[in-house]
Image (cartoon, rainbow, N blue to C red; front, top):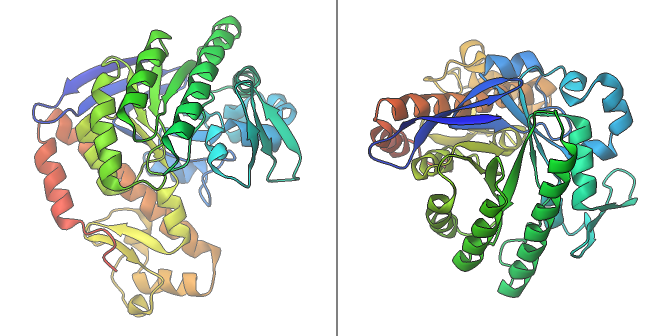
Length: 374
């Protein structure tokens, strides 16, 4: 894995770069659709490629549970199992610790999860997690981390951070001993809640381990937006300038642009696909709920400025009808649109960075975009 910064914006901390992996090169800033179980819901690979997707992220621990390592290994690894020829990130599954119905217990040695499929309890150590991720195959894998819930007490965030740092060290040791010639990158994950002292300590200790890149975890999970941005403003400048900065789980249009301005390189989020399944779509003027009766006879496209398949071929009235009738095509069309909207937004952001026009581009977009318009 190699990362090069090709251009730094003159007015913001935004930068345009190139991430090279065995499965191709991707330009940054980059938005990755989430393929949790090896698929982006309702989309096939042709759909994703047409929207410009060059990288996906899957959940290694959930894939370990279903369909299992033996099946994926017999296919030749996750890339071949999915028939996905491009870049593939894998997440450890540590985020499931935030779900109290999923988590059984955690200590310095391991975390115990209850399977959402059959209720069986599985113990996951950092070493076991690395074994799973390396067996699945991929381009970039993530160290096992402990993500505390929003609003957790300082002492609880501190304890979770101690686990994250211990697990990161153990992941790195196992990775260095077993990755061999797999040509895969390993990212550490910065935790610490919204507490600057904990974030700072985490960054110092993680960077001493010299990971290939760094995820910024534990944000956009329920904290106030002001706290998220304040934490990012503190965190990002302390990360190595020559390594990938990956803001995990953030993907609304306004958050993408504001975070790019702060220097984030990579994003992933279920927001576009989850919103699509709940009839919420992005437009240049903000979000709308296309399932509302307001749009029952509206023959205009979802967004007159959009060039996606849905907007070029179908009306708001038709999509509204499909959703009302619970036709699967309705969700497919809204998902196509939302993914295209975000992928195009990030593509335009990259162009604006190269042209030193990013601040103007960001402000023009945000002036028109009114979140929660409905």
